[in-house]
Length: 327
Image (tube, rainbow, N blue to C red; front, side):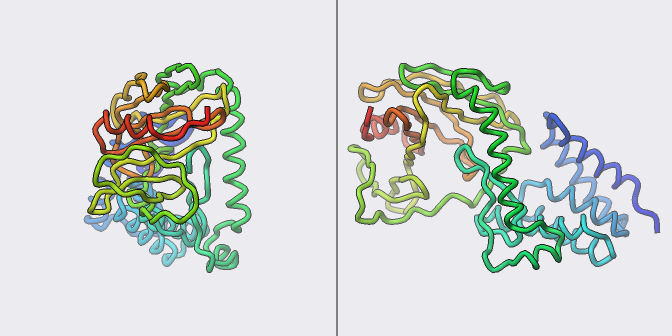
């Protein structure tokens, strides 16, 4: 049985759009490809193992949980029909992506994400062995972790010059404050991995000392939020978050913006209790679909605060201004 030539062409276009410079209209092109694959599936035109593999890869590049699950089912069918290692790997990778985008540990260890400015291997289920991975043509866990470190080495080499004042090639805008430089950098849709359910859950504070603001709007309660902090309303929903990041003096704070989401926001300067702060009205986030305002200001000689949330700008600024300063 011959494989579907149109489906092979769709697959090849998907891959071509991701080689080198990612196609600027990749989201729209991905949607069009998925739509056509759905039509071919409904018409019974996806028959061979290769057809199922090609269709699975198109859905792997979707943007919703059901797309990743569809990719998994198609890849599994390709395996059942006798396709080799690429189908087995994609069956594992699509399952990992489906888990990751729910904020859950992945099973095999094929998916990476950004944590701050670093690439990390998304959390992996410790019960999965390297023998389990080998059965699905997934490299050992140590090799997956080494890939993350290599990605970081490459990124750090690129950023090291920019951190000392040189601009990154994809810089959209920058603002210079007396003690802080902030630059907005564009990222491709492929880099802008979004995990809609991956925001950490607010947790009660323990008895240790914590860097807390002197001001909070009435009715909010302090909570821990992953590596940072937040204040929640009576329903438990966070209204403001803050986190202290390492940023040595003279280095640039890089914020990112996905140009597929429209024109980038402006960077402006604000006064925050005697400190200069940078303000961006919409900040891109990998762990939330909301594009909330963000304030950046120095916390100390080698650190800075990032403050974000749903509060009005004046209240957000008041919280930022009341955070401790070691400068």
